Image (cartoon, rainbow, N blue to C red; front, side, top):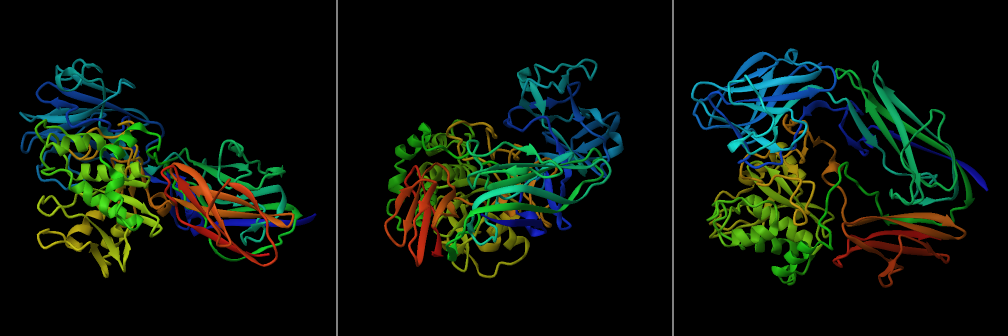
Length: 636
């Protein structure tokens, strides 16, 4: 038995690899997000869930602020419509009144949202009362989400003399909360940072771990903690390279002296809980240092000489995939014969291009509300039936929705994105090993029905890459593929790519299984659901009425259909642990020294004879679609 020490450090960009929530990367470290959105509702309502304010009919909203108010700026974000040109609305915050004037011409991202600047001094910790009163003959509408608790919204019919928190809204049929949110320019009260997984037994960091045990694990922080701020460290550990409840411990506090002995533990993660009681200041994490004593029981008898086997990238937020066993997903695939649609394709990516064009050809006059004057939810089965018969709206939102869900029903991973005045999709391509943004409903000319994606030097662009190309004014080499036909007017790269100036991701594609959570009428009015994840960067300032933003690349470009191969010495052989990311994973497959692909368990022993050997691995999902191939070549 031999002894060794492992040391791992997270500093600078390595910290940025960590997943995080309510935490941003700045000044070479991680600190609590500055900019907090307070909301009692998530915006799960339609544009017909309204409270009309006129005459003596008034509305009241009470917003609770849990901690002190130290904000330099404050904005009340309210979803409002007015049918009176130039109509005015009195908004009173804790006795302080300001006036909103309706302007019919509004910037797209605002549209119905009104960000009303108010003085932070008007606000206090606890309940804050906001009153809404139409002035003159103006008629205004607030949106309302039907939610019986916590009864923080109320309506008055007699000019504010009496109030009720039920029988609200149009026709007195609602009981819920108004879409009134408050943004404060101050730090979030708490956030968390989670490290990548550490292989404690890969002492040299060369891809082959020793056999043995890790003991006396120590984790130390380099952090600036203003008075009252805290950074509480937790850990969990297990025997597999990715967390599972069966093989890992639960999160537990990490004592200041370290974890002590951890026999038979190979993989470890740390998590840091940042908090501040004073929103004017934030803890700043600049580094994390880990060390452990290793007692090796098996020497490393092989070394990696070549590999395509990088660590997997995970997002900070969960994504809800359509399950292969979902009955409505099966109906979608079979009823519309999706396998025949993609069948002639020679490559996976060609199949996606064919599918996008097929979706665009399924109905016409999509920007008309249809005979039923109805906007269907994000449900491909309903959209195909109703829009296909010209019974409902079927615009860009619905083209993107159908494409995304048809991809999911075929075993491809796709998601729906909202961009400027438009809705598109993004699909994971194993052919290119990346996300690709595709515009299925970008051409409202039924004579051309043009669908496309962007490419640079033959490689399709992701939404984030399209966004960066626009904001960085770097369009050299960017083309639309396939090229736009002459009749498709307005489809040049500058005319289209500017729509990606801002984008947000819907964190699910399983709407055929259940419509909620989400917006029942996506795209009919200004988006208001607070479950989307927005990209932010130095040139893309967060919108104050949404609470989820991230500047972490991995939160938008997480891996799909990939494998990371983990090796460990084991008495002259190698133990192999396969870590995979794959929606509806059915099995792993491996190929040894160029032989045939064969199913293997996530953990197995690789018997080696002297010489060089190659191991390839991939995922296969329930639909039978194989993912990308990772490989390692070792010299034994």
